Length: 253
Image 1 (cartoon, rainbow, N blue to C red):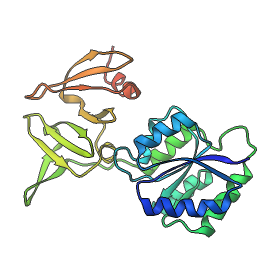
Image 2 (tube, rainbow, N blue to C red):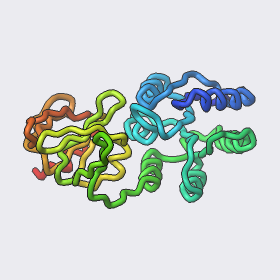
Image 3 (tube, one colour):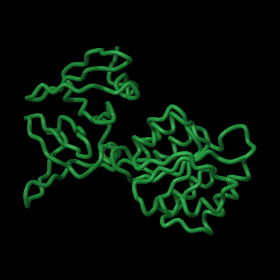
């Protein structure tokens, strides 16, 4: 039995190297698709429902953590990136493997051995909830008071209470203040979500809002809402259906 496998990595050289290494184990891996970002990866996973994915974490559009949290179907996951040894050990102990780049043939052989050891199991080696828990352990929130942005040759500190929301437009992420100013930031929404305190709420793949800056919420369709911000622009943002639980936590009736 082969593992129907999807490769997700935004680095062409890393992807090419991984394919070359996996080709030496044709009896184990059946590579059915490839993606260069998390958004395309999610679509391929939902379409093909593979047994296994090799997943990079730092990717444009939607990174690996963000993609996993948005999945309705969860395959086995083998990460290919770099974190500290404690994080790696946490994943290995739960039978979710972790390959450090550049992936070495000897290390991949251990992964293959692990896969073969539970190839005949009827259930996945790790529950979806346990995977989410492990991901949260890898991304502890640090207390911050401001976000830095570049304006010309200067670095400006925007205090958190001044911020209305963040939104993504293509590969760019913008910080928006309550007085209507907008700044380009070099951080992804997922990184911001990890750093920001709890009053900042992810409402969709493309937006994070300051809950204290929400003026109104209007019911939309399919569990979505229109969020009207209390900024000078009266900004309207559409929530994503997969983030409805985040919004429900803001409603006390």
